[in-house]
Image (cartoon, rainbow, N blue to C red; front, side):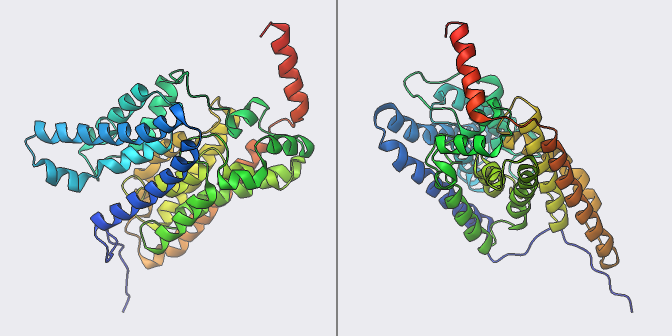
Length: 371
């Protein structure tokens, strides 16, 4: 007798969706608390911003869902309990820098919920990550909207992007020392998006969430692993050294995007194989956008591009029988290797620069034009 296995459309779990979302909320609040203690020490406008940013983001997201429920004459409390708009609000708040205009944040939060979620039918029906849509809205529509009384120094990714992304070993060491080295980046003691800097904390939370079956460990593991492996190989070949790969996963929101955004069960494939392929594309797009576009962060854009591919990936892998598992394993392995090769190829196309020399050139240019 031939026994065949058909994958079901749902994952059985002892935890309800409500419990899952509450645990996810707690994890996001822990990330915010780290930033809260850090920025409160700076006083004044910094303390105000770190408190108001999540309030405005979550408030607009919840208000948008309330108005939507009232318009369609739904029970507001019941609607909110099944829609979880505060999750999108918290994630969006943690992806923006401390000097983000509250007006820009409010508009982007509305767009994230209304155009990124509600127009598709609400929670469970959206095809794009709503928080990523909100963040991209700020990056593209409000790039110059910054508070003048809150000064944030350039992030490591924007700084190295100005230097051509690839530095020789001495140049990389000089660059890293400017931000306190790899250890400082691991612990989050530098300017960046509010929730992206403390990679160690995010990884620990990711492990806990994975252990509690809130997220699939394979998604952040393959995403960060491919970026690390590919850029490390590039660094070793080009003379930047082993730390070049570490830098690429410790900054620019890679860890935060991997744990809290790519793992969104609504916008990524249902099957494990599909999710791995999904993260392979996201990793490749992240490096491609960072190295070849004028967008040094790249994570949110890569997530949205990978979201576009989700239906196709889902169609290929969903409902496979045991007699096709071997073929699917080959497909996944091939995609992993192709993504890794693509990342390496893009990295090898970069010119190697010396960081001190690049900084001296910038100073000479600035002095020549009277800046």
